[in-house]
Image 1 (cartoon, rainbow, N blue to C red):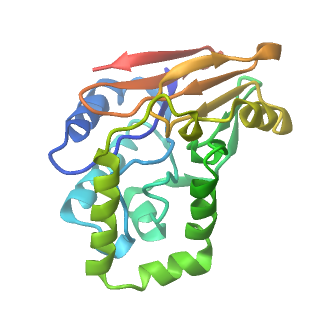
Image 2: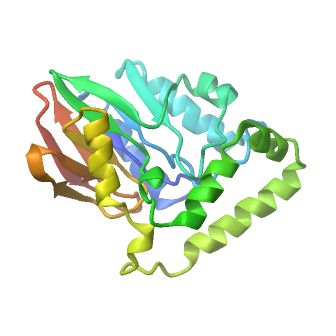
Length: 235
């Protein structure tokens, strides 16, 4: 039995990631002690009041999973940080702060979505700070749904643009990540966001494990009850 960590599913109706998530539920429902969804569960989220029949179906799947996996947790990502209590309650999801310290067999794991670790991108960090301000969030959620949909459409267009994979400004600041591990007294940092799955080994037996995004395949992390971890390719 495992603790499982996933991120960046970017779910939307009739997508490859939605198909893969359905397969994941069937394959892993009897194998997990807990499930941690570390942000960007959906392609976008513009308010609980815009939840569709598709979103309700996803909530139903999570509720079904809870019959097999008693502990299912969610952490906000950069695309779905507006998920609120209405949807969390409907899906029976427990919200985690970012970052969050998890203890497994006396080993300390630091969980994060990962966008806060990309400190080289000053413009994004400023946007993140402003967008997550409670007053700004409430103001946006008070706007007409049609306007919010337009914002979401523009965000999706930006996502479809080619990514400059050689531009480190969009990647994690390793020095910042190491400092977080030290500050929180953890040995392993687990996050998504960058879509660059890999295990980065640091000095002092510390490491940073990056989860993968979901399309026709994904990279997920499994940790057993002895705190041994493995990042696996899932099809």
